[in-house]
Length: 126
Image (cartoon, rainbow, N blue to C red; front, side, top):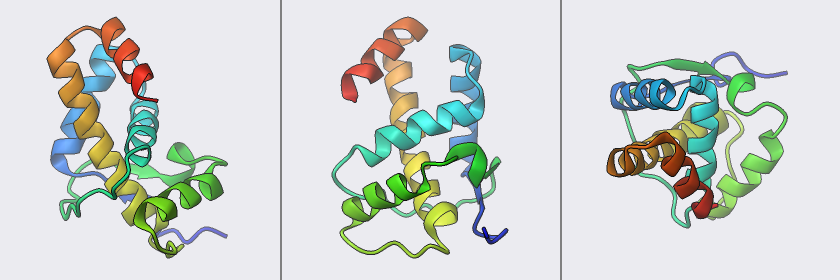
């Protein structure tokens, strides 16, 4: 059974602004934007930097991870080169990955400023 404390995450204030802006311009729900951000971030070699701010939007684990928890745990463990504490998996590790991924997505969108071209660009990164 999932612990209720570790089954939720709160984004930073900046990440919340980024997910809201991307959701609006791309016409996608915020949880979908977060899933894309998560995928982009875990695809990078190094783990994300620590982010202490948790004053933003809250998400439930089932909304973001769904049935892919084991796969994501393996990807994140590979990135961190260590075993992932299950109590911190979602509220810490996934949160940090999403925050970094949102920052990457937002910077790419601001450079391109076209929903169609943005989607083409992030597909190239996969």
